[in-house]
Image 1 (cartoon, rainbow, N blue to C red):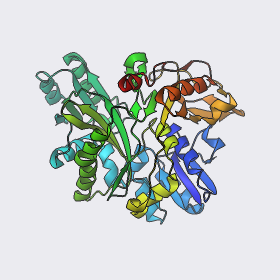
Image 2 (tube, helix red, strand yellow):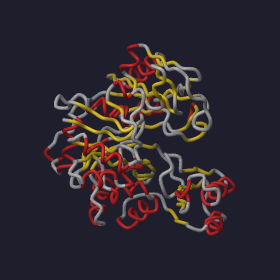
Image 3 (cartoon, rainbow, N blue to C red):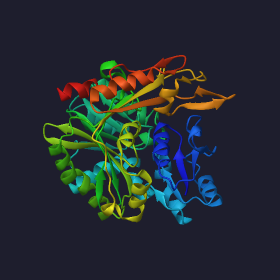
Image 4 (tube, helix red, strand yellow):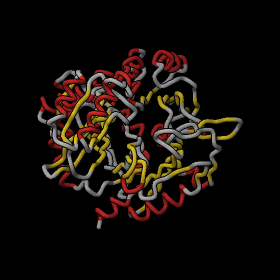
Length: 421
């Protein structure tokens, strides 16, 4: 089988490494891929949002199955376009990808169908939003409506911060058109849990839970990033919580999307908070999370391609989705200064052992060398019988990833270990 994977980050590298395990796979093309992914797939310099070129490439190269991994091409209708040419895909059509593409849509969906989430108001007028903030409870959460590379959410601890965030989004357009509408919602408290779930629009088969570490600095300080590391499973996601999530959130969300004529197939990401009132949805993503994928897929014992095809074919109920009873930890090595300003172009070196366990995100090939080209450069993952062992091994392996200005948080998994105690 010839496969096509749209995207070029650490998540896509993890997906490609997992897909390669299927013996029927003869070739994988990554569009655009990156310098590190080139070791595991044929990279083609076509951007992830260049839908016409992606489709033309898929048709010309007789692709048997396509995996559309990032949010932008899903929202733009990449799956719709590929399917219109007879190419089966993993991922939702654009009418379903709106669950991530518009936070306003997602919040209204949850309100309409009684899915637990934070109380909220929607604004498309800046002055109205600023007036509302005069009396809103603080802290509060300000969200740009559309896609913003995972950075369109501001947790404001003062009224002034909240108003500045609204002005930045609606007047300063720091997230472009994504900030034309904003959601202002109540600040929830409790541990956060990420759950990725396979679905064919009928049944939901959750993957192992995970815990992301969004802040740039140790002890959850500094700016929000795309994620500085992850562990799986998440100790806060107990069997009791999992049961409630299935009954109150997962199945109702799939049913709600079906009722709206927006059947969701692919991977639906549930960003959850375990509040004193029970689990609530913070956000939906219409795809695999990054870097959650880098700890979840190494624990998958079932064949990834078979499971993906089952979501496309509507046969997920009969398909086994099994995860190892182990723990995983992924440590991100970033460029110093991320997520604001950082330098690029530094050569990356790996020990052979580290390379084997590392997913490459922000890197490109230059004069035969792999050099940094982004903020989050690599993610190094270890699997072990205990969480403590997985964390120690992930840090040991990540020490084998070196480049000028390399930066890592030193406390990935610390909160999870404390929770286990």
